Image 1 (cartoon, rainbow, N blue to C red):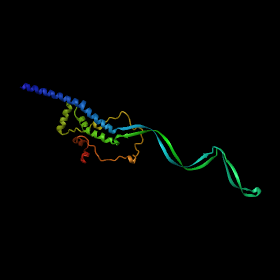
Image 2: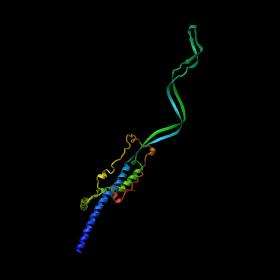
Image 3: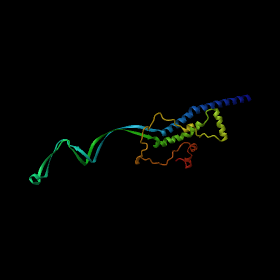
Image 4: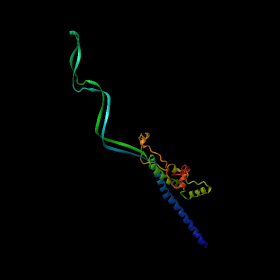
Length: 249
């Protein structure tokens, strides 16, 4: 009976060791990569920027009056005959203030200063052909709420999995930390400091309109809604200020 009990205990120890090894393997090869991969992707989605050039090809009908007020110089393209009435003094024959018709001709190429003040009517189709570059940071759109909420769902799990031990040696250290009251599975680590490694292509390079003011009709309005986040007990550790103010709603 004693031998049988000893054998059972040995078998149980072996099973526990094998199960522990499998747990570490599942944690290292399945759970952690899966959760961290999802969490990292949602962080990257929120930080992403759409950078696309939209070709605009269209035709619009332009109907308007253009006021034209300017001083300019015109050049005569052909001779312009003029006939004017004038008063002429002829002192040689003692004749003064004599009415006479004078024939003149303005020559080709003569430059004449002209003051224009008129309305130019325009009623023509206008072909539009331009490329419009759109650079849209997703964090400044409503997609931010979606990506941020998904991030909050997974962030406590991703950080905790990263802080869990990878082998039996780490497990013993964790047990000692738990017994001494120093265990903190949500402590900051290398992953939490930089969950998203970066992008395979650039966006927004050379774009110089980021500082332009948003048109008044397009200014976003804050609704005051706070993303719900994940499991409340873990989420509160990530966002204590939100829960101190009454929690998400």
